[in-house]
Amino acid sequence: MPDMTLAPRRRPLWRLFIMPVLLLVAAIVWSGFWFYAASQVDVRADAWRAQEAKSGRVYDCAKRSVGGFPFRLEVRCDGASVSLVSQTAEQAATQAPITAQLGEILVVAQVYDPKLLIAEFTAPATISDRGQQPSMIVNWSKARSSVVGLPAIPQRASIVFDDPLIVRVDGSVQAPLAGAKHIELHGRLVEGSALDGGAIETVLQIAGGSVQGLHPLLAAPFDADVRTMLSGLKDFSPKPWPERFREIQAAGGHVEIVQSRIQQGDLVAVAAGTLGLTANGRLGRRFRRSSTPTTSTRSRPRSS
Image 1 (spheres, one colour):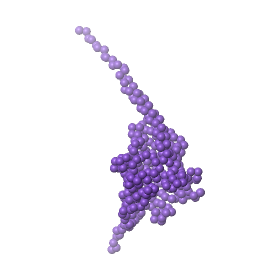
Image 2: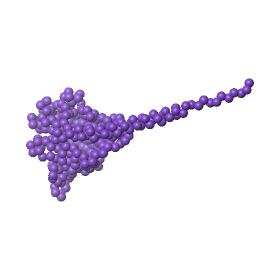
Image 3: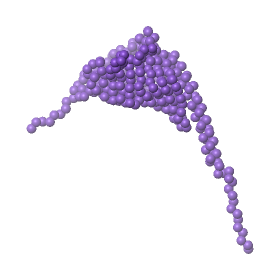
Image 4: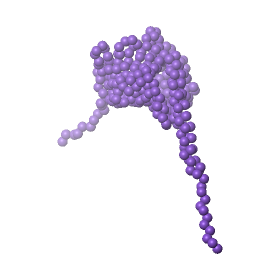
């Protein structure tokens, strides 16, 4: 029998292009989704600014840009400013705004996790009355914050400063007012949602802090750890702080100082208590208990 050689079967060439085509389609779809999300940043930011402006907190950017393609959304705000009106009882009576300005704010969100926002702030920041020269300058080496839970009710928020320094400005004279090596402020929603009358727990930690011009004891470096619990907060809708405090007071809310510990060298002061709110939204002192500062005793070697 003559030898018969079978020709190899050729595979369809179109199968070789399946994966590249699918990757190309996925890239086009993802790019479209990212650019759509980026276009919504300005819409949501303007809506949020409009709500805050009705509450007396006016936020502005000299220049705003969006980047971070393909997996992040980076919103950069150059020439950021915040004007506060009617945020205290005194401001409500005089309508005198306080304006804070800083160089840049960078807000970052992952496209696949938009409820987590991380921000970085560029120093310095200046604080002044509108139309007047700055009365304070705030500097830091690094400042960052994070918020979890947006755009719904925030669940957790934190802000951290490294080497913050507050300087009082009086004409051409600048004098240090307060500073620290490290400051952290954390807050979280506990006991259910705010709509159910939940509470907010806050933790303030200060390392190497000092305050000038108030009391000689505060001028020396100290460490502080203050934990508080705010109850009676019913909602997170934008409104001036005096109005919010009055609502908290009407709901029977208060500020509970769960623990306050301040250490300065060998001197340690511990206190706890409750701060009530008056009908006009002011804080009132109602400490339940406190311990007087005590000095720890170090062991000394015995003489032979």
